[in-house]
Image 1 (tube, helix red, strand yellow):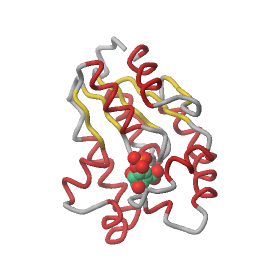
Image 2 (cartoon, rainbow, N blue to C red):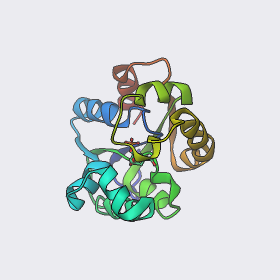
Image 3 (tube, rainbow, N blue to C red):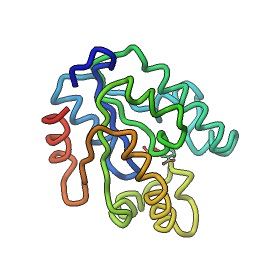
Image 4 (cartoon, protein in one colour):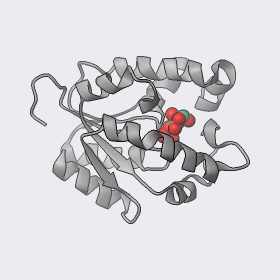
Length: 172
Ligand code: S3P
């Protein structure tokens, strides 16, 4: 990833449950990098949880905050950055991701994502009667965007976070 025009960071993209935060912390540890998470940057600035932000400002308000969080990282180096699953839905975010560094897409089958997120309460988009169907739709709709945004894709279906982290750290 030696390209003077790009930051020296590793950015993880992918759907909810793909393991971005868990894997990201492990990769940061093994590379000796810092760790940042756009969801955490957003909740720190807002002083509210993600469900609270969605309730008060809608998804659109959350997306505006998400772009601001991503932008706040431009100029930083030596970070592993876990992003929210919807980071690719705003076209203006794609050049920001590339500018930050090497972008890795953690992909997974929607059924696997459903299993991994079944007990989560902090994801407003999955708070509906058919979260599995939601994940399928998001998977179909966003896969081309993750493809476009990323430099490398790793399928996580059959691998532990440790294995995935090893794969990312080796290539990035
Ligand atoms: C979202 C994913 C979440 C969070 C928000 C919206 C999405 O992050 O940003 O609930 O649109 O996919 P994780 O992917 O870390 O769960």
